[in-house]
Image 1 (cartoon, rainbow, N blue to C red):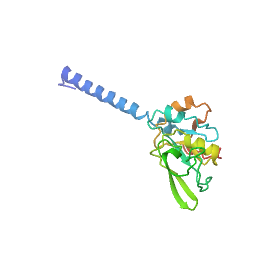
Image 2 (image 1 turned 180 degrees about the vertical axis):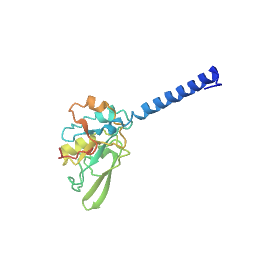
Image 3 (image 1 turned 90 degrees about the vertical axis):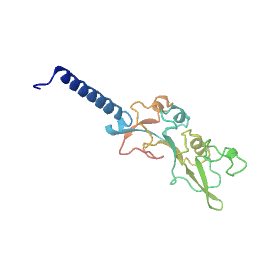
Image 4 (image 1 turned 30 degrees about the vertical axis):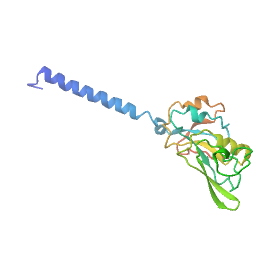
Length: 185
């Protein structure tokens, strides 16, 4: 540092300090979303404990919620009247909005053969309200259930849905087995 003035030295020191500060801020912010994935744990809903209260839609920090409806085709048969698709007591089994439970049209009905239909979830439209899940559990076979979609979840260290879940259905699970199907432990 021979021949370097005090002013040059202070300028260099200030530049390095700013770079170190920016690097620290960037490192800290990069660690926020998905921080739990590095620890090997993720948030998930236990379908056996879920009571379809609707809080997944309103309490998630993501808009729309990272919780989505999942359809287990292994459990579900093809039918004409789906308890998760149609309003209870619907007189008409058509696809009109007045006959559907889902407020966002996230369940699509596709004809298979007379009199059977297949019901598919359009995940981008699903808001995690659980109306279809509740209808399926009450009038169907329980093939619709809610799951946290980890490609959408920030994996907050303190899940806001888990804090308000009245049934304690949301907990941390190993990231190697992040999805729970109905009937699995």
